[in-house]
Every structure is written in structure tokens, then in C-alpha cells.
Amino acid sequence: MDDIGRLEEERNKLRDEERSLIQNLRELSSKLKEVRSELSDNRDKRDQLNETIKLLKQERDQLRTKAKNGIEQFSETRKSTPGGRRAAQAEKELASLEWKVQTTPFDRDQEKRMMIQIRARESQVVSNRKLQQLRGEIEKYKQEGDTVHAKIQELAAESQKHHLEILKLREQSSSIKQEIDEKVVLLDVTREKALLAAQKFLMAQNQNRYTTRVMRTEKDRAHREGLKAVAQEKLEKKEKLSLLELNALYGSGEDDEEDTSG
Image (cartoon, rainbow, N blue to C red):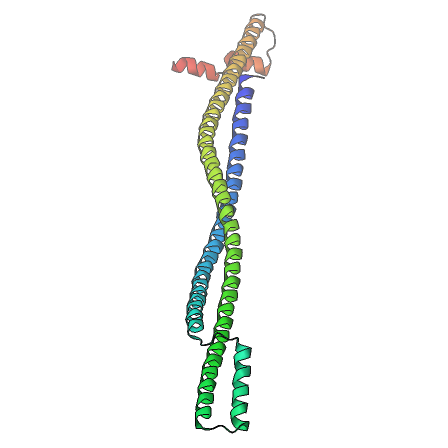
């Protein structure tokens, strides 16, 4: 392979490398765009979940506060409940006393004692009913709080998945960005090399054309000189000359003009 062929091959190789790098950069840019879009989507979902978790935590804390207040109220109510009887027993005793008052004749002192007992049982029944109500409310608040807490844990796990995905995508994005930067530098170097190779090839090609033209001119000149010598010899021998020989002998060629002008 001659120098021109080698230079052309080098130029074409560098051009192919340049096109390959450009295509590679397009693919990397498209991939980076996809990764950043996915990163943004995961970040939005995580932030939305965290905002929901924040509100649920407030709701859970409110329910726990209500349960705590209910427990304190329950404790105070139980302390103030007279007799310490169970609710069913107190209501049964109250009903029995009320029936006894309605069906049994009492003197004034006996009736007074019975009314005191009835009021005591009534107070105990009311307190027991209040305790039952408080116990139900406390249990309700606890269950609701546990339900909200379970939901918080569920959403927190989902948020953590998005967070881990965000970390992975950030790493991918950084890696792709670094690769793009490296490819851009390599593309600039390759372009410079390709331009230099193209210039070398063009210079060699022009030089070759010039050399070929000069060689052709020299060949034509030698041919004319040969014809001229033959024509001169024929002329001396008084032989017939051809048109080419006449033109070589008497014609004014480019070389003669150049010599005359020189």
C-alpha cells in the first residue's frame, strides 16, 4: 500500500471512530435522561410517602394521647368508685333494693337507711358504667393507634425501597455522566486527529496529482523531441514527413513558449 492509500485508510478509520463516538454519546445521553427521569419519579414518590407518614404519625400520637388520658381518667374514676363491687353485682343489688322499697313497708328510719343504700349503689353503678365506657374508649384508641402505626410501618418500608432505588439511580447517573465527559474529551481528540489526517491525505493527493502532471509533461516533451529528431533526419534525407513530424519540427509547443518566456 502506497503512502496515499495508508493516509486515506487512517483518515477513514478516524472518521469511523468519530462517528462511533458520536453515536455512543447519543445513546449515553438518552440513557442518562431515562435514569434522571426515573430518579425524579422515585424521589417524588418517596417525598409523598414521607409526607403521608408525617400526617399519620401526628394522628397516631393524638390517639395515643387520648388513650393515655383515658387511662388516667379510668384510674381516677375507679379510685372514687365506692364499694369496689363489680358492675353486674352493683346493678343487681340496686335492683333488689329498689324492689324491696316498692314492695316492703318500712318505718321512717328503715326507709332512710334503705335510701342511703340505694344512693350508694346508684353511685357505684354510674361509676361502673363510666369505667366501662372509658375502658371501651381506651381500647378503641389503642386499636386505632395500632392500625395507624402498622400503616406507618408499611409506608415507611415502601419509602425505604424508593430511597434505596434513589441511591442506586444517583450512582448510575454519576457513572453515566462521568462516561459522557470522558467520551466528549476522546471525541475532541479524535476529531483533531481526523482533521489532521484529512489534511495530510489531501496534501499527499495534491502532491501526487502535481507529480503525475509534471511526469506527463516531461513524457510529452520527450516524445515531441523524438519526433522532431526523426523529422529532422527525414528532412535531411528528403523523405516525406507525417503531420505529427511536421508539427514537431515546425510547431510551437507549450514547452517552447515556456522556454521563450523564460
